[in-house]
Image 1: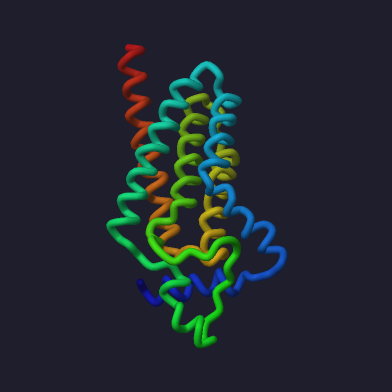
Image 2: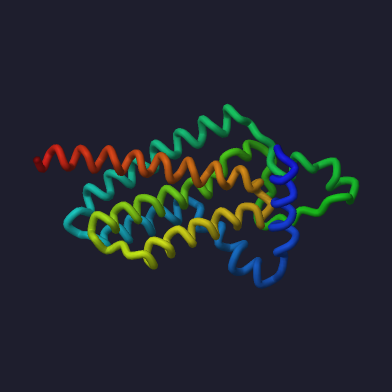
Length: 192
């Protein structure tokens, strides 16, 4: 863990602390829960393109499964401590304060699962939007701005270091893009 990673964690976790940030940033973390985000994603896929929603749903499910398996394998393999665990002696001694919202977490920090989930959904939605020719700059930007906010919320809530969030974003986007690419190729071969 780099010094920069720790400094950036405290800059966001402590530096942005306010009642207003609790509302917009802290509670944004809920969009990283699969039981909330995946149903919303399915609804968006249906509304986005009813003709291709089955193909889009296949890519969505594949991305969710592949990303979830990869996430859990990485968490166990890396077994990285979370901020509350790493700084436990300093917290107990009163030298460090960590803003914690929701359940305090201590183990398997890398990569961030919430971030992986939201970036998986954002990537599939962007892919499906592009296929439906409904993706414009602002729509694509909005999808990923929400994903970035969820990633930042994991730091703000005291659950992850910035490197965990970047790892989750790369994993979510990478596995989702790979699944979308494969499903798109299979669909093209069947049509041709």
